Image (cartoon, rainbow, N blue to C red; front, side, top):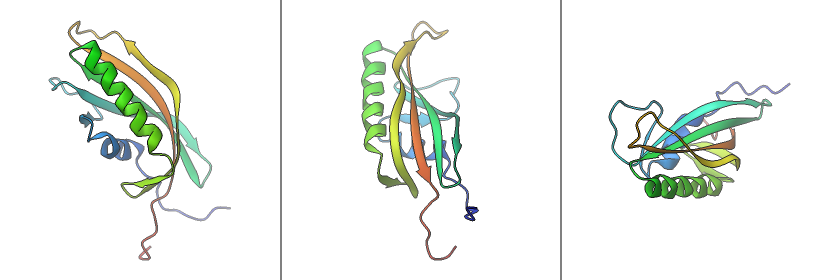
Length: 131
């Protein structure tokens, strides 16, 4: 039995830190926003005691189709490049596209929303020698 009881990294917090250089990143959409904006949400997944594999839903929201798709592609490349790195103290083993970016309608006709789902596999944070 695996005995490490430290919590796994918070996937949404790691994603926020990873994607912040691209645009404002939120977990819950605000009533008002600046364009462009990225919304992240963990949408399930599972762990095997060593690795937590999360499904991460990422929405790129903008006032134009061009900007939403440009941001979605920048997000995809950043997420894919995060595999085999340490980010925000989390050991990111692998990343993959589960559902490629796709535009979905928004209730507000002035907003363009492009959504993708990624698989992000992470291990617990690095030990600091204090734990």
